[in-house]
Image (cartoon, rainbow, N blue to C red; front, side, top):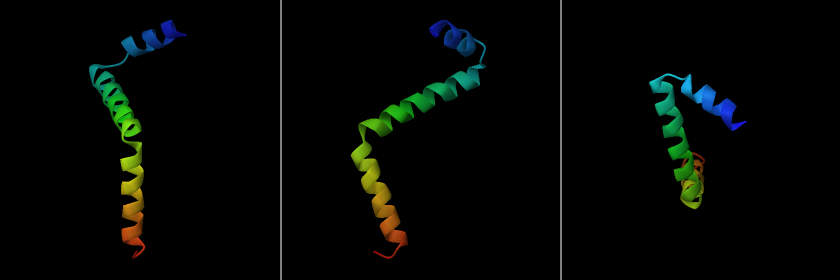
Length: 51
């Protein structure tokens, strides 16, 4: 399985590889700050609903 992923990754362009890494870093950042993200979303929806 890892060999298949490795082959697929090597076939990608440099731009695609960069987007993959940026996406992984963003996902890790969201997971680490999950509580802050949820509070921000709640606050945003509260603003639009007039609360």
